[in-house]
Amino acid sequence: MIRVLVAKPGLDGHDRGAKVIARALRDAGMEVIYTGLHQTPEQIADAALQEDVQVVAISVLSGAHPTLVPRIVNLVRQNGQEDVLILLGGIIPEQDVPAMLDAGVAAVFGPGTDTRDIIAYITEHLPAA
Amino acid sequence: MSELGGRVLRQERAGVARALTVVERGGSPGRELLRELFPHTGHAHVVGVTGAPGVGKSTLVDGIALEARRRGRTVGIIAVDPSSPFTGGAILGDRIRMQDAVMDAGVFMRSLASRGQTGGLSRSCAASLEVLDAAGFDLILVETVGAGQSEIEIMALGHTTVVVMAPGLGDDIQAIKAGILEIADVFVVNKADREGADRTVREIRSMLHLAALAPPWPPPIIRTVAQTRQGVADLLDSLDRHQIFLQESGTLAGRRLHRTAHLLRQAVTDLADRRLQAAMEGGDWELVLRDILAGRRDPEDVAGTILSGETPGSPGRKEP
Ligand SMILES: Nc1nc2c(ncn2[C@@H]2O[C@H](COP(=O)(O)OP(=O)(O)O)[C@@H](O)[C@H]2O)c(=O)[nH]1
Ligand SMILES: [Mg+2]
Image 1 (cartoon, rainbow over the protein chains, first blue to last red):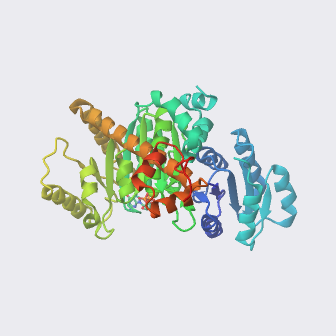
Image 2: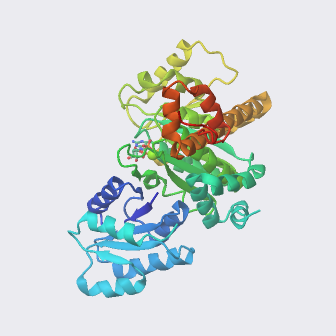
Image 3: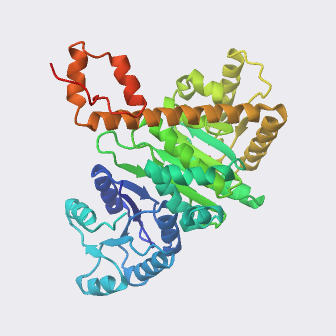
């Protein structure tokens, strides 16, 4: 069973996109842990740890990804979750993508991504159990 | 003791998390781990929290956990949500309302999907409880939705059952099954800030009178406002009193026996399921069915063979 944490860090008040992803992943047969808005990087990493997820899908719309995302990746890795697949979605300007990948994000999905592409990406790149 | 088992006993967060995954997955690694951990269980007070969706169970669990932490206890939480019967997927959203407690190093919270199996749910839930119990959490809270058969089974795994209701959620009381009435040790009327809370309390009271129960433990009815933590300390006091009642009345021993019986029944059913599965996947299954159909073999005998773990297609059998 694939377990995914859908995480919504930062101050932006919209989780419509995160919920659409959550439902799509559920409909693809995954178990999705959703923790709501305004999560700190510490809360996200701790939830990923307790829930022992294989995937963390982060959604950021506020533009705060340059500071938030590397923190989340570092905390998750510090917790010993070396293999967890970290995905990023939301509004991420093209020029920021390389920095996000450098920070340890496996893939960035822009607005309008077909959720089927995300599902396919997860099933193809899932760390071995 | 395996490395993972040791990490559980040390209440290492990552170890507990991985152990829960291993036992949820089942199979022989899960069984082996449970065997190791079992001698270290029996310490926790296991409290089930059940009620209709939206009554405030998660918010209440968050509050109880915080209050228990204030009193110096460690807390494990399991929140069960249904899996989709069509895709097997699930959205597990109880953490949204548990944000205050779950960052504390003395609290461990895990979301569990029902994964569609009735018996299997109580098995994986029981296994998760054993892990948290072995990890040494003093109080374990189990949140489940509604009042279906599987929830009642899960509640049978705990020591104390809290049934949560809220005013204005329709004909809540009528919807309560007799089974729930029997298993409720504490009633909570949450959302006491809303109109109608008094009525809900009165309805529960009259329902308890109607049932004409004169139990040695008359279930208290506690009003709470989970969001503001109002009444939560009273609720924890009641949970403590119930635990003492169980110990002093000797009921605890009875419940442990009941729980053990439940676990044994579950283990037998699981084993039988696995053996049946193995027989069905064996190459001779179709031939066995044809033999039974033709009256050459008796289904009861074949069942006995399957349950004993032998392959039902007898080697010396000759086709007519
Ligand atoms: N007015 C009021 N709302 C509450 C109270 N407790 C919880 N809620 C709200 O009720 C909704 C459902 O709560 P939740 O804990 O998720 O319920 P659950 O589905 O039973 O776990 C949330 O919006 C809570 O904020 C309360 O005591 N009073
Ligand atoms: Mg809930």
